[in-house]
Length: 640
Ligand code: CUK
Ligand code: CUA
Image 1 (cartoon, rainbow, N blue to C red):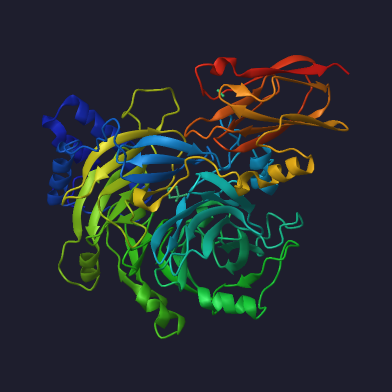
Image 2 (cartoon, rainbow, N blue to C red):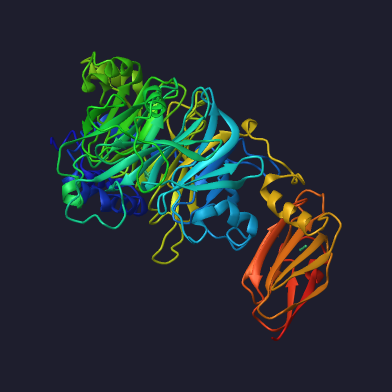
């Protein structure tokens, strides 16, 4: 590498000589991960002097424009953030980056009683016993490539689940476990004609029948499987066995193809084996052919369930395999529907697959690599790419801790051999970015206003809080020619991915409908007990079971006392009769480890064993009224 033209991390430090001590320190901290990584990456990228100047200039302009949303003003976008290992989804306001709400999904939540209430336990279904989750990819349902404001779907990598969030109430309404796979990672929705399907990748390779009879040595039956989930029914419609494993996925804007990245085409079981070959691939799924194969009965079943599993391995009509440089990660469809952008991870490149060449590929008229129409070199560790509405792409460079802004058309021209510079700007981010996302950028409505970059490390950007640091979600203004960093947002573990949806797309309810499906089963139970939830306060005794029905109107419960016997299984059903927006009540039974939220006009219930003899106060734990402290009552647990 020519030293004068291509400053390495060390040289960058030298050039920083005239700068303040602090910014020099920042630069050397940046080098911390980058240096070691250069050795393992496929090759270093020449960074021109012009690029460096652009990046320094951009840094000097940090905080030049403001994302201020003044008191009383509302944000323009809803952000849906994955909560990573916390298992939840968070709603942020963009551009303020204020956290507005948390939606418990795969976690158990003390505040709302998610995982504690009977209503949430029904939704959590067969995975209710899991206390944990690892959510990665939140994506909203679409109509003809536009967000429809109906649902947000998200995966749980840890327990191979997919959840659906209802956007009218911002609560999870369905969670399913995907059979036959392990570690559901990449998740997206069908964009066109509408979100009939949610697509998701089984990342880890497991025996086709994973019944405990397979060995660790013979891995010949190990497979990864692509799952296609019916979005309305929340059932797996069909699955496709592939060669190699599956990482991230996306859909086209024609309703024809899905594509997934594979970083372990070797089917290695150790890190060394997984990165041994110079190329991996993208697998493209032909939806029409898959649906026809299911109809024609050309599937098998595994693990004793009825899910149709198609064989999409190499040579199959259902799939095509496009070789790309080793260990690709993110895949992002350009909002015009022209390209799948495949992010190189161990390669400094992004490979663009021309979607309009896929018909020819499936007709065997062209070779797989002929679908690649650009492979710009961007920098070290490209993980994910986002798009604006002006033909530019923004790629996170994990190892370089930068965002590369590049022009798609110019990258295509350069691949054809034209002498054009596709690189527009490199901006330092802090630090080690994974996903990034533009406002509306995964739909036809990409508007090129804001870019959020989810940095895995925050290091020195916030007050130190011990060895465990927050992530750093950075907001970048992309409305002008230059990217401008405008906000650092600390976040708890661990936003992998996010989407930003214009507020005009979402209509939420202010209070619950009494006939909402969320508590329909509880309403049915009350009916069987002859209880009218909207008016009755009753205790029903049914052998060892006690069902306590009460209303709540600020600041009183309909029942101020009830009696049970030690060992009784007690179900408390609270119906919040308040009709005023934001008057949420809680119900906490002391010394029993249970509490829940009851929104206005909602019914919530929970069941526990009364195992603590004596007087036990229950109280409202959501502040609702000046006399909120007085909103309480007594349960007497008579000793057996
Ligand atoms: S993955 Cu986390 S940085 Cu789960 Cu989308 Cu790429
Ligand atoms: Cu009801 Cu606080």
